[in-house]
Image 1: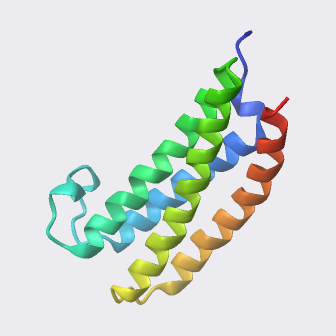
Image 2 (image 1 turned 45 degrees about the vertical axis):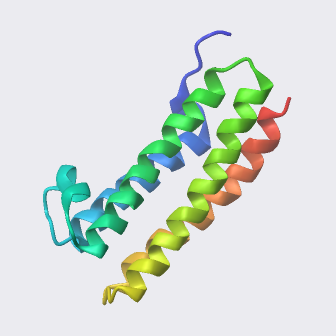
Length: 130
């Protein structure tokens, strides 16, 4: 399969936007400002923020894997995994609200970004079936 320029694929660009927004929100909401060490925290909020970041990082990786694969099954596995990740990120937003995050507008911005991503995801998923 020839090399694909991922930056021309709308869902890939949107996944990078989602990742950037997740990083900024994580940095703002976490108690531990060293984002690379969030996993070591005992804070429930930091653990959720770490999961949010981890999942946000996985989305562009899975899109790239699907786009570079010639195997239909591998492409569909990546697409299915992305769908799970999207649901997880929505759950993290709800969990952060329940943890007492007062800045709900940031979580709502992230949800809005996820909604926009999901629209592109549905189009992209249909396209990788061919």
